[in-house]
Image 1: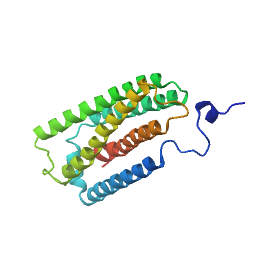
Image 2: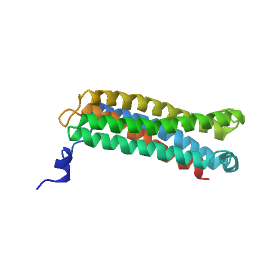
Image 3: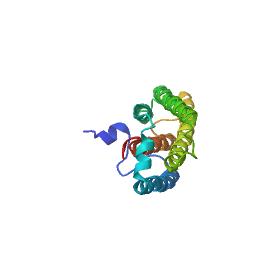
Image 4: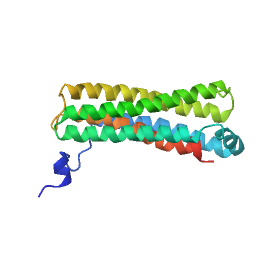
Length: 195
């Protein structure tokens, strides 16, 4: 009888991707943790400013960005499953869908940035917006890099360069994308919702 792990080609006790990528992700998460801690501590020190400033953000836009990134993460996971089954060309299709979902995030975030700048809510406006721009801008750069990685993986899948026995590099790229998702899942409530 085959187990779920055998069916998907995953070995028990095996971390997907390369160890170097895990160290890189840990380093990136550490930087984000410091920024998130700075945001939380400053909010505790200036609760009224943060509450008032948060009202100037559109929570529905933040939710739409969250859904677009999570949808991209779902498609990246589906692509990974196709590669584990040695169907890389199907994986390429899922990666293109992930890129499309990520593009929605980019469009929404750029629209939000433009709107905030039009209102005069740049980095210098107050402490909330200084931290908002640092946190979300740093994350935005990670999304853009993640999209480049997904595009590169899609092209390699299209050429059939990944399969069940050769997927470590592919898994590393998908891991990076999931890190981007995870960070936004923390940033969205922290920046847009919690007071």
